Length: 510
Image 1: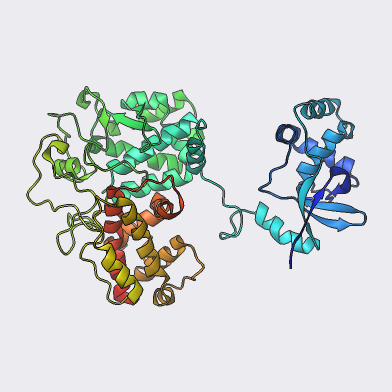
Image 2 (image 1 turned 135 degrees about the vertical axis):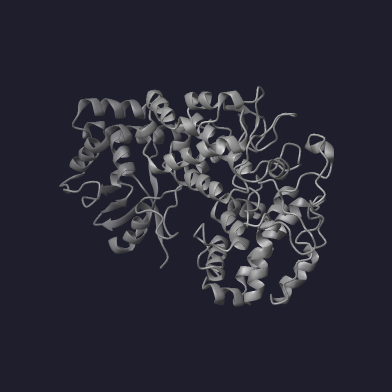
């Protein structure tokens, strides 16, 4: 049914005596108002001040009311109307201090005289929307709150200050994701911690811990690490044991386990054997995702070989921008990248520059393949719909270096068309109306029921899964929907390498 909307004045409404914020019920508006004040007067005063200053209530969240005799009963928005009533008549508050607070709030500006309100036909009709508003995400139907990282990104894009701890955490996470791009287990560990406990990462890696590790956060003036960059004095290999422990610790423990400097110092002493030796520290700071200062050694390798990590993990000057959440292809256990070497000899996105001067003057290894010149070069999908095959042929003429923006947009479109065809939907069980992420994840689960098992999943599909599970999906969507996302050749090759095996597997299943 069509909804009815109406501007309602505070004097026209009565508060809901069945409001969940008032578990014992009330007998009057005055009692309801004072119970709300008793619950949290400070927040109610803050709400009043905000409405007085702005002259309106939050237009993104409409109150909901139903007709009740000559008045309107507020079912959603009781705090807003209570604050407005108190500003109209501060004497409604029993406590004199509260009365003074609302008189001062009125003096800050001009509170709204009326509020645009949804008028439902019944409590039952209103209840559906109220439950969605207050009970979480509800499988995508309710309110999906921003994570700490998304909130910080929003504030940064609007030139507002970001909490220093969150900003520190984002810089650390961005650098580690790029530095350990081929280390699947490390990437998963960092990804989970950044999704679930980003602010705790900032609390753990406080200035005193950074000093102990010889880490520093430097403003770089760019956007790759949200304007900040992590600099270190030890190699990736030397730092990995401690970093693995640290992120495990952050995930397993509450913030009380590292809430102050003394506790953190004791924790670090307890894992002293995992800390890199001061005697091995470089005298010069450098990016962990880059290369060591010329002439210095990385020490013993715990992962890829020194030459492999130095050349193949986005070293400084490789032309690849730093993008949070977007590392290199995952190792498939035989030394090849899951998205890298393929028929036709195409290289994964982590290939270094062909210019020796871009890698500290060192010549390229003879076995290294050239970076992919054209998007999805050589890929054929004979079982896909004709429209997609035709589009793919056109995409294979796109020079990634010359038109990176078009290549990134088309990469996203090709993936969406692949998982949205009627044949693909029948296999995956997804619906046409589902989000792209949900469609891709459904197809990944169809292709590999163990895709969420980090030890048993199909390695050829691993990088697609990791990208879709983290910020890679935001970049794919951002290419089409967000003008602030800047595509570049690195990203085009990145997603080409990650999704080529996925597209081939989908084609084989059709």
